Amino acid sequence: MTTLIDDFQAAWQSGELVFPAAPSKIGQRWFLRTRMNPANSRDLVFIGINPSNATQFAARKLGGDPTTEKILEYFPVGEDGSPLDWRSMTILNLLPLIGQSDDLPCWDSDSGRQEILDSIDITRQILKVILPKCHCVHLMWGTPNKKKFPWKSTVLEQLKPEIVSLIPADHQVQAYLSKDRRHPLHPGYGGRAHWPDEQPHDAYRLLQQQ
Image 1: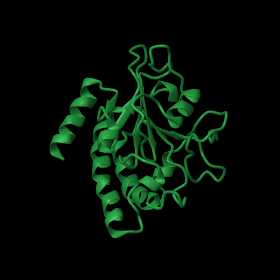
Image 2: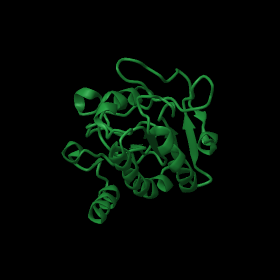
Image 3: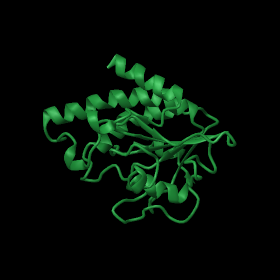
Image 4: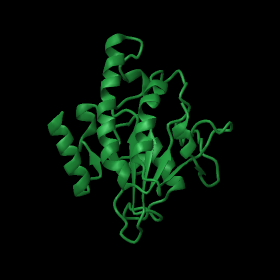
C-alpha cells in the first residue's frame, strides 16, 4: 500500500491526468482530472460515488464516461481539454473501487463489507493530498439511502467529518441540490440529466449533516 500511495502522490504532483494510469487493470481509480489552464487561478474538485474505467475527463467517445460527459455540459473545456473557467477540474469518489453497483463487493456479506470499508483508507489518503489544494469542492454523490449503493450512508458518516477538516475556511463547497435540499445531485447517467439549468448552491451545510 505504501508504494502505491507514494506513486499516487508523485502522479498528482507531476500533473498526471489519471491514476493509476490503467485503472481497469487493478480495479481502482484514485483521481481523474483535466489538463491545466494557466490563465485561471482556481481548481475545482468533484466528489462522486465510485469510479468507472474512464481514463480521460472527456466525452465517452474520447475515453470518458457518462458522468464526465454530463459534467462537461455544465463545466466546459476548450479544444485542448483544459477548463474554460477553472485552472483544473478533478473527479474523486467516496470509494476508489471501479464498477457498477452489482460489480462491487457485496455489502451484505462480512467479507464484502470489510473490503469496502478497507477501501476508505485509500479515499482518506486521496482526500488529504488533494482537497486542501482545490479552491472549490463540488459534491455530487446523490442520495445517501439509495438501495443501489447500500454502503453509501455508512461511508458518508465516516468521511464527512474528514472532508470538512480538510477544506480551508476560505474555500468553497457547492452542489446542485435535491428538491428537499438534503443531498447533492449526481449529474445523471443513462440518458437522464439530474442537474438543473441554474448555478450550483452553497453546500457546506451538507457536510455537517449526518
